[in-house]
Amino acid sequence: MIEHGRIDEEALAGYVVGQRWYGSKTREPAHVRVVDEVPLRTSAPPLCSIALAEVRFHEGTHDMYQLPLGARPVADGWREAIVDEADGWTVYDALVDPELARELLRLMRADTTVEGAEGTIELRRLDGADLLDRHAAEPRSVAAEQSNSSVVFGDELILKVYRRLEAGVNPELELLRFLTARGFEHVAALVGWYAYSGVPLDATLGVLQRFVAGVDGWELALDAAAGDPEPFLAAVGRLGEVTGAMHSTLASDPSDPSFAPEESSVEALGLLVASVDEQIDRAFADLPGDVEALAPIAGRGEEVREQLRTLSRLGSMGRVIRHHGDYHLGQVLWTGDDWIVIDFEGEPARSLSERRQKRSPLRDVAGMLRSFAYVASAAPILRGIDAPPDFEQRAREAFLAGYRTTVDPSLLPSGEDAIARLLSVFELEKAIYELRYELDNRPDWVVIPVRGIERLLQARVP
Image (cartoon, rainbow, N blue to C red; front, side, top):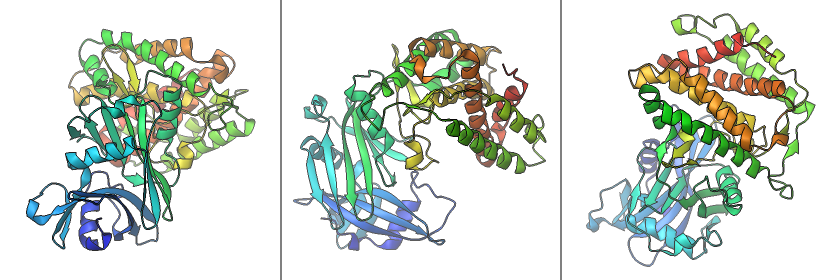
């Protein structure tokens, strides 16, 4: 076992804070320490364990991170992803070690339970997951990720390891298990998972899925906007169909309390409007006066709020269901024949309990529509070529037409006007979020949410 007392706290802090997946880069930690460590392999080097590292901040708050750790004798000369060297051992990130990455699969295959000092790790396989019984191909890390770490095994399996942990079941595990059990073909099927339960917290640690090769929808759309848009626009209708089928499947089991669709209340609509109204108020109160791109909406905060109130005059929101929660073109893959939906964690800025709440499926739809707007406006920035002037509108129309053919109509508000109004509310909510994000992170992109807000202001409300 790798005893966490061997890892120097300063070395641990330096390692954690320096990783891409570390989520509080603007905050200085007061200390970083391992609060539990569960041994997975102790018989012979390389050793392996899962450590839970607490990052505590000066104001008293803290975050929890998962560290899969490997250890080899210093004499082995291991040099990758080193956390610390102490007591004759080199401690490092286990996911970069093919032998230890395969060890996680082996333990999952065997339905293993392992005890630590403060808690237990369960590594489980999904019933009937025959892929797990095959010899694991040579693993390779996925380098582009920000908040998690993934390892691909050949062209068959992908293991996603959650780095920042929150108490509770990760919605991705719930949604993948539900959709896989019901034979929904447009997700990378769940194969297994592992989770921790103990004194520090109970949390999902990772999921194992079937690996699906495909082209990221965002890149596909950008290429189409800067080149020949017709093949992509033809495929967008199919994406709408897949989205509608996904929502209908998620609403298909009234016997499961976690997934049974529920009638929305008048109070729910009021809470939604109040929440968006507050976001508008905050966003417009903080608008800088020296950004030229903000001119079309400058001083129009009350006008935006009035448009929100007008849009929200509808009798019903339809039914609320479990949904994707962070739906956009970067969350879908085009395989060459069809679409696969990925990354069901929900919006990372929201708490786990918020991400597990049931909401109108139109919230996902609005996210995808905003993504089309981003493609049209980002094409000159990223590809140096203007998108066709009708690109966004044609993508919207194709997607919505496809969606309406497959979604269970009982999930939506009654009547076309009510659907259009609620969809606009969610688009406005998304555009306001984008406005604040771009001002903080990509000022050159502020023009994109500004155009979205301006479009909603100019829209004729039915």
